[in-house]
Amino acid sequence: MVMINDKFSISEDLYDFLMRCKEKMFEEDSMVLGILWGDVGSGKSLKAQHMGYVIDTELDIDRVAFDKEEFIRAIIKNRQKVIVGDEGISLFFSRASMTKEGRLISELMDQIRQKNLCIIICVPKLLSLDWSILESANFVGYVWESKKEINGKRRTIKGNLALYPKFVDKDYKMEIIDYLKIKKRSLAKKYRSRPEPFLTQPGEPIGKSFKKPFYPVGEYKYRTKKEAILDKYMKPQIDPKIELINKMKKNCPELTDAIIGKSLNLTRQWVNTLRNRESLVNTEKTLHT
Image 1 (cartoon, one colour):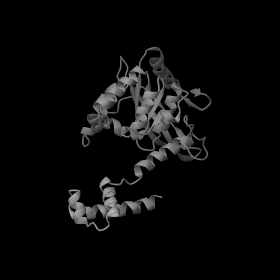
Image 2 (image 1 turned 30 degrees about the vertical axis):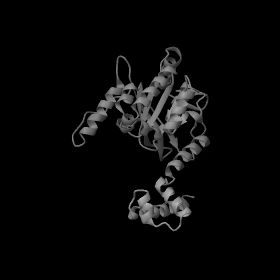
Image 3 (image 1 turned 90 degrees about the horizontal axis):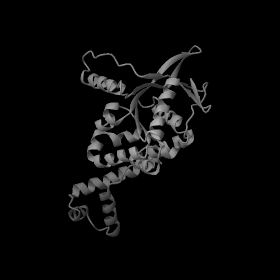
Image 4 (image 1 turned 135 degrees about the vertical axis):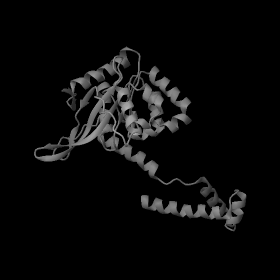
Protein backbone atom coordinates (compact mmCIF):
# COMPACT_ATOMS: atom_id res chain seq x y z
CA MET A 1 0.00 0.00 0.00
CA VAL A 2 1.09 3.59 -0.69
CA MET A 3 0.38 6.27 1.94
CA ILE A 4 -0.70 9.58 0.40
CA ASN A 5 0.55 12.54 2.47
CA ASP A 6 -0.27 10.67 5.69
CA LYS A 7 -3.98 11.07 4.84
CA PHE A 8 -5.06 7.77 3.27
CA SER A 9 -3.55 4.77 1.51
CA ILE A 10 -4.12 3.14 -1.87
CA SER A 11 -2.75 0.01 -3.51
CA GLU A 12 0.49 0.21 -5.46
CA ASP A 13 -1.33 -0.78 -8.66
CA LEU A 14 -3.81 2.10 -8.32
CA TYR A 15 -1.03 4.52 -7.43
CA ASP A 16 0.99 3.51 -10.51
CA PHE A 17 -2.10 3.88 -12.70
CA LEU A 18 -2.83 7.38 -11.38
CA MET A 19 0.81 8.37 -11.87
CA ARG A 20 0.46 7.25 -15.48
CA CYS A 21 -2.60 9.54 -15.78
CA LYS A 22 -0.54 12.40 -14.35
CA GLU A 23 2.22 11.66 -16.85
CA LYS A 24 -0.26 11.93 -19.73
CA MET A 25 -1.35 15.38 -18.50
CA PHE A 26 2.07 16.88 -17.75
CA GLU A 27 4.45 15.14 -20.12
CA GLU A 28 2.39 13.98 -23.11
CA ASP A 29 0.23 17.06 -23.71
CA SER A 30 -2.90 14.95 -23.25
CA MET A 31 -6.09 14.78 -21.19
CA VAL A 32 -7.61 12.14 -18.91
CA LEU A 33 -11.33 11.41 -18.66
CA GLY A 34 -12.56 8.96 -16.04
CA ILE A 35 -16.06 7.87 -15.02
CA LEU A 36 -17.05 6.32 -11.69
CA TRP A 37 -20.47 4.71 -11.43
CA GLY A 38 -22.41 3.06 -8.63
CA ASP A 39 -25.42 3.43 -6.37
CA VAL A 40 -26.15 6.63 -4.47
CA GLY A 41 -24.19 6.62 -1.20
CA SER A 42 -21.69 3.99 -2.35
CA GLY A 43 -18.71 6.33 -1.91
CA LYS A 44 -18.16 7.52 -5.51
CA SER A 45 -17.65 11.19 -4.67
CA LEU A 46 -15.01 10.56 -2.04
CA LYS A 47 -13.28 7.96 -4.22
CA ALA A 48 -13.16 10.49 -7.07
CA GLN A 49 -11.66 13.08 -4.73
CA HIS A 50 -9.03 10.63 -3.49
CA MET A 51 -8.05 9.63 -7.02
CA GLY A 52 -7.96 13.27 -8.05
CA TYR A 53 -5.86 14.22 -5.02
CA VAL A 54 -3.20 11.64 -5.88
CA ILE A 55 -2.81 13.34 -9.27
CA ASP A 56 -3.32 16.91 -8.04
CA THR A 57 -2.72 17.60 -4.33
CA GLU A 58 -4.05 21.15 -4.80
CA LEU A 59 -7.57 19.87 -5.56
CA ASP A 60 -10.05 22.28 -3.95
CA ILE A 61 -13.80 22.76 -3.59
CA ASP A 62 -13.96 25.13 -6.61
CA ARG A 63 -13.04 22.17 -8.81
CA VAL A 64 -15.80 19.92 -7.51
CA ALA A 65 -18.75 20.75 -9.79
CA PHE A 66 -22.36 19.84 -9.08
CA ASP A 67 -24.00 21.40 -12.14
CA LYS A 68 -23.28 22.46 -15.70
CA GLU A 69 -22.42 26.09 -14.94
CA GLU A 70 -19.87 25.16 -12.26
CA PHE A 71 -18.37 22.52 -14.50
CA ILE A 72 -17.91 24.90 -17.45
CA ARG A 73 -16.44 27.57 -15.16
CA ALA A 74 -13.89 25.11 -13.74
CA ILE A 75 -12.80 24.00 -17.22
CA ILE A 76 -12.32 27.58 -18.44
CA LYS A 77 -10.32 28.68 -15.37
CA ASN A 78 -7.92 25.74 -15.01
CA ARG A 79 -5.04 24.02 -16.79
CA GLN A 80 -3.32 20.71 -15.91
CA LYS A 81 -5.66 20.29 -12.96
CA VAL A 82 -8.20 17.72 -11.76
CA ILE A 83 -11.91 18.55 -11.94
CA VAL A 84 -14.51 16.30 -10.30
CA GLY A 85 -18.01 16.29 -11.76
CA ASP A 86 -20.13 15.16 -8.83
CA GLU A 87 -23.30 13.12 -9.32
CA GLY A 88 -25.56 16.04 -10.35
CA ILE A 89 -23.37 16.67 -13.40
CA SER A 90 -24.41 13.30 -14.88
CA LEU A 91 -27.58 14.91 -16.27
CA PHE A 92 -25.38 17.17 -18.41
CA PHE A 93 -23.79 14.13 -20.05
CA SER A 94 -26.98 12.12 -20.58
CA ARG A 95 -27.99 11.17 -24.09
CA ALA A 96 -30.91 13.64 -24.11
CA SER A 97 -28.77 16.58 -22.99
CA MET A 98 -25.93 15.72 -25.37
CA THR A 99 -28.33 15.71 -28.30
CA LYS A 100 -29.56 19.16 -27.34
CA GLU A 101 -26.16 20.64 -26.46
CA GLY A 102 -23.87 18.68 -28.75
CA ARG A 103 -21.92 21.71 -29.96
CA LEU A 104 -21.28 22.94 -26.42
CA ILE A 105 -20.05 19.49 -25.34
CA SER A 106 -17.76 19.30 -28.35
CA GLU A 107 -16.24 22.68 -27.52
CA LEU A 108 -15.79 21.65 -23.87
CA MET A 109 -14.03 18.43 -24.86
CA ASP A 110 -11.65 20.49 -27.02
CA GLN A 111 -10.96 22.73 -24.01
CA ILE A 112 -10.29 19.68 -21.82
CA ARG A 113 -7.76 18.38 -24.37
CA GLN A 114 -6.03 21.73 -24.89
CA LYS A 115 -5.75 22.42 -21.16
CA ASN A 116 -4.53 18.88 -20.29
CA LEU A 117 -7.19 18.45 -17.64
CA CYS A 118 -8.15 15.32 -15.73
CA ILE A 119 -11.92 15.05 -15.45
CA ILE A 120 -13.53 12.47 -13.15
CA ILE A 121 -17.31 12.23 -13.51
CA CYS A 122 -19.54 10.45 -10.96
CA VAL A 123 -22.76 8.88 -12.26
CA PRO A 124 -25.31 6.40 -10.86
CA LYS A 125 -25.56 4.40 -14.12
CA LEU A 126 -22.76 4.08 -16.64
CA LEU A 127 -24.98 3.39 -19.66
CA SER A 128 -27.03 6.54 -19.06
CA LEU A 129 -24.15 8.57 -20.49
CA ASP A 130 -23.91 9.55 -24.13
CA TRP A 131 -21.80 7.20 -26.23
CA SER A 132 -19.33 9.93 -27.25
CA ILE A 133 -18.40 10.44 -23.58
CA LEU A 134 -18.07 6.70 -22.94
CA GLU A 135 -15.91 6.37 -26.04
CA SER A 136 -13.65 9.25 -24.95
CA ALA A 137 -13.13 7.91 -21.42
CA ASN A 138 -9.69 6.62 -20.51
CA PHE A 139 -11.16 4.54 -17.69
CA VAL A 140 -14.40 3.66 -15.94
CA GLY A 141 -14.70 2.40 -12.40
CA TYR A 142 -17.45 0.64 -10.47
CA VAL A 143 -17.84 1.77 -6.85
CA TRP A 144 -19.94 -0.18 -4.39
CA GLU A 145 -20.83 -0.61 -0.73
CA SER A 146 -20.31 -3.92 1.07
CA LYS A 147 -20.43 -5.51 4.52
CA LYS A 148 -17.51 -7.02 6.41
CA GLU A 149 -17.13 -8.56 9.83
CA ILE A 150 -14.70 -6.51 11.93
CA ASN A 151 -14.11 -7.27 15.62
CA GLY A 152 -17.13 -9.55 15.66
CA LYS A 153 -19.54 -7.01 14.13
CA ARG A 154 -20.86 -6.53 10.61
CA ARG A 155 -19.54 -3.19 9.37
CA THR A 156 -20.39 -1.09 6.31
CA ILE A 157 -17.55 -0.64 3.82
CA LYS A 158 -17.87 2.22 1.31
CA GLY A 159 -15.76 3.09 -1.70
CA ASN A 160 -14.84 -0.38 -2.98
CA LEU A 161 -13.47 0.12 -6.50
CA ALA A 162 -13.13 -2.07 -9.60
CA LEU A 163 -11.19 -0.20 -12.30
CA TYR A 164 -11.58 -0.81 -16.04
CA PRO A 165 -9.09 1.28 -18.10
CA LYS A 166 -8.58 1.40 -21.84
CA PHE A 167 -5.11 0.23 -22.85
CA VAL A 168 -3.65 -0.28 -26.33
CA ASP A 169 -3.17 -4.00 -25.77
CA LYS A 170 -6.33 -4.63 -23.71
CA ASP A 171 -9.54 -2.63 -23.48
CA TYR A 172 -11.00 -3.39 -20.04
CA LYS A 173 -13.38 -0.45 -20.48
CA MET A 174 -15.17 -1.87 -23.52
CA GLU A 175 -15.35 -5.33 -21.93
CA ILE A 176 -17.37 -4.01 -18.98
CA ILE A 177 -19.51 -1.74 -21.20
CA ASP A 178 -20.36 -4.66 -23.52
CA TYR A 179 -21.16 -6.81 -20.50
CA LEU A 180 -23.52 -4.17 -19.06
CA LYS A 181 -25.25 -3.78 -22.43
CA ILE A 182 -25.84 -7.53 -22.71
CA LYS A 183 -27.05 -7.70 -19.11
CA LYS A 184 -29.48 -4.83 -19.73
CA ARG A 185 -30.92 -6.44 -22.86
CA SER A 186 -31.12 -9.95 -21.41
CA LEU A 187 -32.68 -9.54 -18.00
CA ALA A 188 -34.55 -12.85 -18.23
CA LYS A 189 -31.64 -14.77 -19.74
CA LYS A 190 -28.36 -16.04 -18.43
CA TYR A 191 -25.57 -13.67 -19.43
CA ARG A 192 -21.84 -14.20 -19.36
CA SER A 193 -19.85 -13.59 -16.20
CA ARG A 194 -18.67 -10.09 -15.32
CA PRO A 195 -15.26 -9.39 -16.89
CA GLU A 196 -12.25 -9.13 -14.59
CA PRO A 197 -11.16 -5.56 -13.80
CA PHE A 198 -7.63 -4.30 -14.23
CA LEU A 199 -7.46 -3.77 -10.46
CA THR A 200 -9.62 -3.63 -7.36
CA GLN A 201 -9.25 -1.36 -4.37
CA PRO A 202 -11.04 -2.11 -1.07
CA GLY A 203 -13.06 0.65 0.56
CA GLU A 204 -12.98 1.93 4.12
CA PRO A 205 -15.21 0.96 7.07
CA ILE A 206 -17.69 3.60 8.17
CA GLY A 207 -18.68 4.22 11.80
CA LYS A 208 -17.86 6.06 15.02
CA SER A 209 -15.18 3.56 16.02
CA PHE A 210 -13.23 4.11 12.77
CA LYS A 211 -11.06 6.96 11.54
CA LYS A 212 -13.06 9.67 9.79
CA PRO A 213 -12.59 9.65 6.02
CA PHE A 214 -10.28 12.29 4.57
CA TYR A 215 -11.93 14.81 2.22
CA PRO A 216 -9.23 16.45 0.06
CA VAL A 217 -11.46 19.51 -0.50
CA GLY A 218 -12.58 19.65 3.14
CA GLU A 219 -15.58 17.75 4.47
CA TYR A 220 -17.39 20.85 5.76
CA LYS A 221 -16.85 22.74 2.48
CA TYR A 222 -17.98 19.74 0.44
CA ARG A 223 -21.13 19.07 2.46
CA THR A 224 -22.06 22.76 2.63
CA LYS A 225 -21.72 23.14 -1.14
CA LYS A 226 -23.66 19.95 -1.81
CA GLU A 227 -26.50 21.01 0.49
CA ALA A 228 -26.63 24.44 -1.16
CA ILE A 229 -26.96 22.84 -4.60
CA LEU A 230 -29.68 20.47 -3.39
CA ASP A 231 -31.46 23.38 -1.74
CA LYS A 232 -31.42 25.30 -5.02
CA TYR A 233 -33.09 22.47 -6.89
CA MET A 234 -35.57 21.71 -4.12
CA LYS A 235 -36.93 25.25 -3.93
CA PRO A 236 -40.27 25.51 -5.74
CA GLN A 237 -40.10 27.42 -9.02
CA ILE A 238 -42.72 30.11 -9.69
CA ASP A 239 -44.35 30.11 -13.11
CA PRO A 240 -43.67 33.50 -14.79
CA LYS A 241 -47.35 33.66 -15.75
CA ILE A 242 -48.25 33.58 -12.06
CA GLU A 243 -46.02 36.58 -11.39
CA LEU A 244 -47.61 38.47 -14.27
CA ILE A 245 -51.12 37.66 -13.04
CA ASN A 246 -50.17 38.84 -9.54
CA LYS A 247 -48.90 42.18 -10.90
CA MET A 248 -52.09 42.70 -12.90
CA LYS A 249 -54.22 41.93 -9.85
CA LYS A 250 -52.14 44.20 -7.64
CA ASN A 251 -52.24 47.14 -10.05
CA CYS A 252 -55.87 46.63 -11.08
CA PRO A 253 -57.78 44.72 -8.35
CA GLU A 254 -61.01 45.05 -10.30
CA LEU A 255 -59.76 42.81 -13.12
CA THR A 256 -61.56 39.47 -13.26
CA ASP A 257 -59.95 36.14 -14.15
CA ALA A 258 -61.80 36.23 -17.47
CA ILE A 259 -60.38 39.63 -18.42
CA ILE A 260 -56.85 38.66 -17.34
CA GLY A 261 -57.16 35.41 -19.27
CA LYS A 262 -58.22 37.21 -22.41
CA SER A 263 -55.25 39.60 -22.25
CA LEU A 264 -52.81 36.71 -21.72
CA ASN A 265 -54.49 34.41 -24.22
CA LEU A 266 -55.53 32.06 -21.41
CA THR A 267 -58.90 30.71 -20.37
CA ARG A 268 -60.52 31.96 -17.17
CA GLN A 269 -60.20 28.43 -15.74
CA TRP A 270 -56.46 28.37 -16.46
CA VAL A 271 -55.94 31.73 -14.74
CA ASN A 272 -57.75 30.36 -11.72
CA THR A 273 -55.59 27.21 -11.81
CA LEU A 274 -52.39 29.26 -11.87
CA ARG A 275 -53.52 31.35 -8.93
CA ASN A 276 -54.30 28.18 -6.96
CA ARG A 277 -50.85 26.87 -7.88
CA GLU A 278 -49.33 30.03 -6.38
CA SER A 279 -51.06 29.27 -3.09
CA LEU A 280 -49.53 25.79 -3.16
CA VAL A 281 -46.07 27.23 -3.89
CA ASN A 282 -46.37 29.66 -0.97
CA THR A 283 -47.35 26.78 1.30
CA GLU A 284 -44.32 24.77 0.13
CA LYS A 285 -42.07 27.77 0.77
CA THR A 286 -43.37 28.03 4.32
CA LEU A 287 -42.72 24.33 4.92
CA HIS A 288 -39.29 24.61 3.31
CA THR A 289 -38.20 27.41 5.60
